[in-house]
Amino acid sequence: MPHPTSNVALSHTRHDHQACIADALTRADALCRERGLRLTEIRRRVLELIWANHQPTKAYDLLAQINAERGNAAPPTIYRALDFLLEAGLIHKIESQNAFIGCAVDHDRGQPKFFICRVCGGAAEIQSNEIDRAIDREARRAGFVIDHQTLEVDGLCALCADQSEAG
Image 1 (spheres, rainbow, N blue to C red):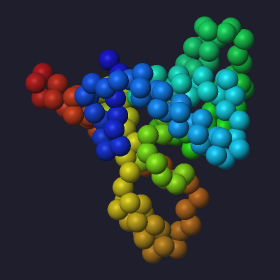
Image 2 (image 1 turned 90 degrees about the vertical axis):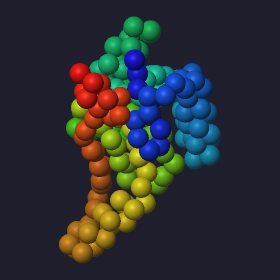
Image 3 (image 1 turned 60 degrees about the horizontal axis):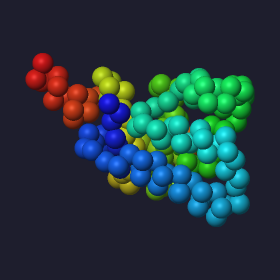
Image 4 (image 1 turned 60 degrees about the vertical axis):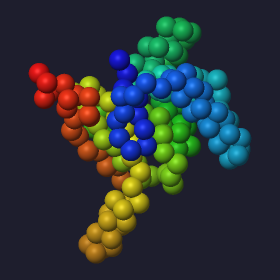
């Protein structure tokens, strides 16, 4: 079963997943319209597939899904769509897994933070101004200029931790 996410941590509560996907696509449409970007059919479908579950999705899995539907996509097509979605701030890359997940948090681009469950693979984007300030403060203290940051915290989500304790 896919593991839904919230803005704080992995959540295993039931939710209307179709509404979740629809909301993500509506936000993407609005953002692209606002910025004068073109959300093509393939970009939109890649975004929809990424939001189809709340676990990181690899590019070649997306390619296989697109080819099962259309039969004519090549890897560069998928990577161009992913690059667009990343640049637009609609998805994030989970660096440790070389996979992608929908952006669930309203924030300025470039500072994603994730809790990643090492058992089920679920990932949840979190937002913490406190963490952002601490990283900025320590970078300034060290004279370090940050070009890019992604914070990934590995551990057990609540459901997997409960199952681990029960088993």
